[in-house]
Image 1 (tube, rainbow over the protein chains, first blue to last red):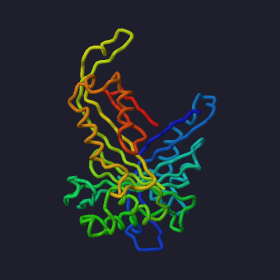
Image 2: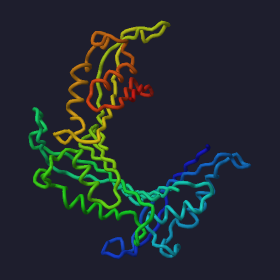
Image 3: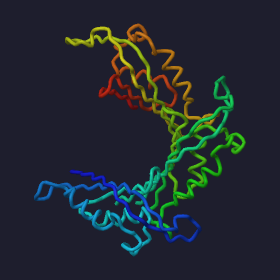
Image 4: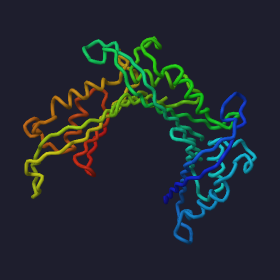
Length: 109
Length: 109
Length: 109
């Protein structure tokens, strides 16, 4: 099995729709650290699992320096962002989204 | 599967009731580093495994800057503290409690 | 399951009896980094897997600032030291012995 890991950082704002009181319901922002994990039993015709630049382009173009509530039609929790990234990157099986030091969400297929 | 990890630090004092001589039977304190791990196959209605702030609130409100012997009715070893945290946080399956650099206790379901 | 991890550092000298030429057959010393892992399904009457201080005492008393060839009746390789520690600590299932940066031996039951 072949694996790649891509780590990148984005800045974005969001607020959460919650059924209880929380300061997370106010618009605020983070420097998100995102770790993308892909795997494949065979390499593609370019000798890769997934090109690092494809991962960067998808994530940077879509969510860097954006208001995530305007981008997504789901509640932009770290969990949901991890799931969205995993669904949209070829061969991806796991995504870690660190919202702030000490707060990490992970989706794994 | 969705996962979250929450890392936090608290200051608290404790002494241990032991059936042998040890300096741990004297009241003393630590800066405890606590890592909480939760998982869930489906997200709750807020799009989360467990809100980071619920974890922080439970741990900070209950044990930060406290004398653990006054808070708990069990012997406040790092093992027992890890177990207590795990029992009290929704979707929690593992807790690491670092008492000092080099001394770590873990409870995992 | 409850787990504990204890990390400690000792200084000790040793030489190895080998059936080939090696500079390790000369008396020399290391700062050994030792990681001890214990586990137990139930805690003892003191609420612990194994007291951190018992681990420290055993290892420090027996091998810190010692010539290991005088202490042990076996060839004091990192592997044999890891095995000896594991045999002598209650509930221990794994020991890592780092002889120098990059050189680690591990015994696991």
